Every structure is written in structure tokens, then in C-alpha cells.
Length: 105
Length: 221
Image 1: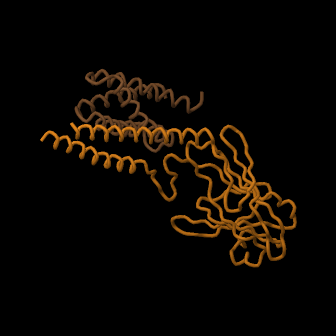
Image 2: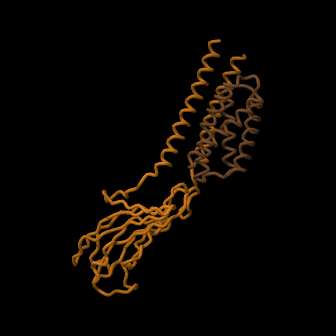
Image 3: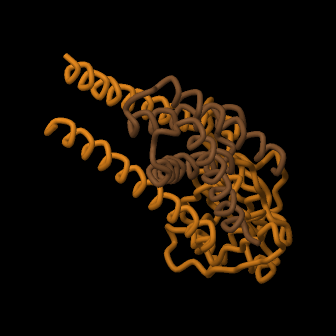
């Protein structure tokens, strides 16, 4: 398994975990809308995180913080309401994925 | 009033978007210091050899390296060892090779003493001793070759470059252009990099499209 395969699996797992967490909190939205949003925001944030990590431009904590800020902003502008709930959801989802990546890296 | 508030939220979102991009751009710029390797990069061995020094046993060879650093720009003169790979100094800009049949010692390696020796044209050298952490190159050897030595001149060319990778693989590439060091792109890294960039930009465009679509939809309601 090469680096690209590992990155694709990591992205798929991140999307899956974040999708279920966001779906649990933002129950009033359709699951396919949530899935689309989570895929899109992760396709933006994941390559940035991977590049920052592989080139050691930022520390692990700085990367996670940047990803949280970026995803909060993107999901916020996509949903355009309930900013506090969106923020808390993204914070929790990223905390879970960060713990998972910390355990598996 | 409600529409105005919503528009205000969207406008403030766009402002936040610009601020966020600026923030990400600033933190993504690697730190650059004069003599410190930036984060995300590491040092590897970069040296040079003259492949056919043994063909001229009557000569003593001297390398002249023009080095620029934060404090000064200097020519550094050193004897060349026939078999050793001479390390390039950090900040190397130019290289010249001189030859002499005279016996000279280290103290005599001054610019003034080398003026009447057979010296090559000045070669431009781009330092390759600092690479990104993702780059698997371990060692870069520039191989030069002497074409001819006369009493007053020395004709030298960049002949080939030898890359040694972390895996132990060695790759030799001939110089086809004296100004450009031949390099092999690393396919998997290049492909992965491009794929992520395309996906990322595609996703960002899709998000912008959704936001505009929502904005137009709300305006028409």
C-alpha cells in the first residue's frame, strides 16, 4: 500500500466519521445534503492538511486548528445558519478525527 | 429587515473568507532564514567530481567556488582530490577549475597566484543540497569533464548528474543543457500532488457555486 492509498483511505474515514457526527447534530437537514457538504469541505481541507503535515510546514496542533477554522467557515457558509451549532459540531468532529489520526499515525 | 440581516451575514461571511484565506496564506509561507534550513526541508549531500582528472597526472587541480552568504561574497580556493567528491558550500553560485604544473602549497592558493594558471570558464552552479522532506533524494553528484588543457586555458563541461535515493537506487542523467541540471520528476509524488490540487479546487468551486445558487434562490423568494 503506497502513500496515495493511505491518504485516500484516511480521507474516506474522515468523511465517514464527520458525516455521522454532523448528521447526528444537524438532524433537520437531509442526509444526502450533509454528505455532499462534508465531502466538499473535506476535499478542500484534507489536501491542505496532508501537504502541511508531509512538508512539516505546521505542527500537528496548528494543522488541526487550521482545518477546524477552514471547515467551520466552509460549513458555515454552506448552511448559512446555526453558526454556533455548526462550530461545535465541526470542533467535535475534528477532535474525533484528530484523536483517530493521532492513534494511527 | 430579515433579508438585510441575511445579506449582512453573507457579506460578513465573504469578509471572513478573505481574512481566512489571508491567514492560511501567511501561515503556509515557510520560515526563511539565512543559514537555517526552513521547516519542511532538509540538507542532503551535494558535491562534484571531475571524471577524468587521472588523464592529466602532471597537473595539480584547484577549484574556485564563489559563495554568497548573508555576510559576504567570496571566492574559496581548494585543491581537488582525484577520487573524492568535493562538497559544494552552501551559497555556492559559481565554480571555476584551474590547473597548474607548478607545485604550490595551500598558502599560495590566493586569487593573485591563480591568475596566471590555466583556468576554466566560470560555471553557474545551483545548490541542490536542500530538498523538501518529501523528496527521496539522498545525494546529488555533479560530474564534470575536462575536454582540453592548454597553458592558458582549461575547457571543462558539466557531464552528468548522479542522484542517489533513500531506497538505494542510483540514477545517472547526462547534461543536455549546460545551464539546467537534469532532474527526474518523481511520478507518484507529482501525480498525488496534482490530483489533490485538482480535487481541492473542484470542491472549492462547487462550494462557491452552491453559495451563489442559494443566494440567488433566496433573493428570488
